Length: 335
Figure (cartoon, rainbow, N blue to C red):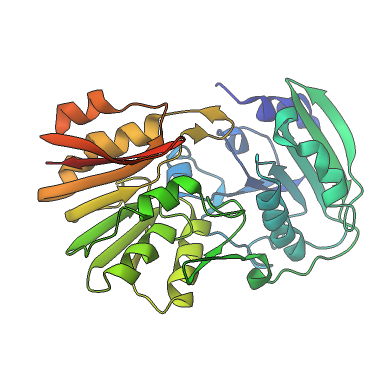
């Protein structure tokens, strides 16, 4: 069994957890939760794709929603939280977690040195005094006792941006939380004419691209998909704030898509956690033909230094770069 560095450091200290009732949450990267001996365990998974890694697992409970409640963690006395790369996302998730656990609960936080985990002591000092348990594999394991309760109100965590009179709402950890991405703005600038038919927004994030189209072309029908539940909640909030309508769907790229569309749009990520990874963009391109109608279009933005010409040539009759600046370019591919 291959485990990430964060899980390896937990295994180094496995004796601590033998008599604990453990609730796992955060940036879980592997199946350590089903391989750690505890009285009982429950795993909080953020996406359907994460659940696939635990297929055929027995004697362990799973929870697959964004937010937890006191009922979710009833009879659990210990948290093992995997620190993500995004501090605001960690604060958001931990505020929710800690508001549901009883005072006196054990809290363990693990993360890589490069993830910003050292800031956890300062971020959580109002509720927990964290001390280092171990430091190995370029990761840190810290622990503490929950000393006071947090108060969690979802609406307090939305960040709001205004762009050309559009209201964009976003939760921590969602792409575009701190500011509207310049690449997304460039892609949105190409929707200058009326668009008709059905549109699929892959990796919708805050919903910025979809509402940009809907304001210009309110008669079109948009389906917004993302693998993150926090993104779907953000997209719905953005739709509601602008009095617009669209379909929201939890899907890891096309995993939960069954219809065909006139256009597929995306600002795909090129990072997987802390590492550069182009797999998402490749999968969007290579599988888009299955989900495009005849004479359909794929339109996406990427950094100017990245080229996807070889993939587009293979699957599309023609493609163009329809907009470009010193940092980003927009591809338009027609089947």
